[in-house]
Image 1 (cartoon, rainbow, N blue to C red):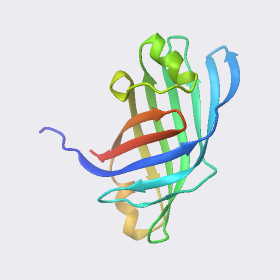
Image 2: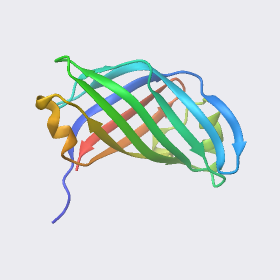
Image 3: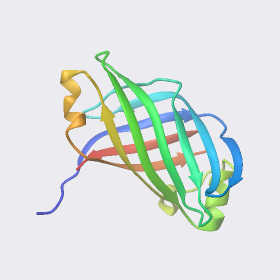
Length: 150
């Protein structure tokens, strides 16, 4: 059986300037504060609340391990906690541009995530019962992630 992908919605979140910790034994640590935004789509709509962050480890091979944690306040008022882990990489030149906050065409960047959701709202319990795939795009001051239920 072949997998199917059902589009859930697109996260569009503003981000602040990354906080760099410098190079450590595992790579360069960074925290990117999430300023807020929206998720819009056929199955999930709401506000991305400010106060989340994307915790990153830039490995020696140039791959960014990412873990974003944030909260969605759905249009119906329900709260959904999100932990979105993934990988981002591109050519050495394009990764350097991304890390400097410059724009890189999304087709030249591998940016995939596996969002997991937690909520006490019965109408959104379906989010806790499936696996999801995110296709990401990093812009200089924002991030977009298209989320699909697998």
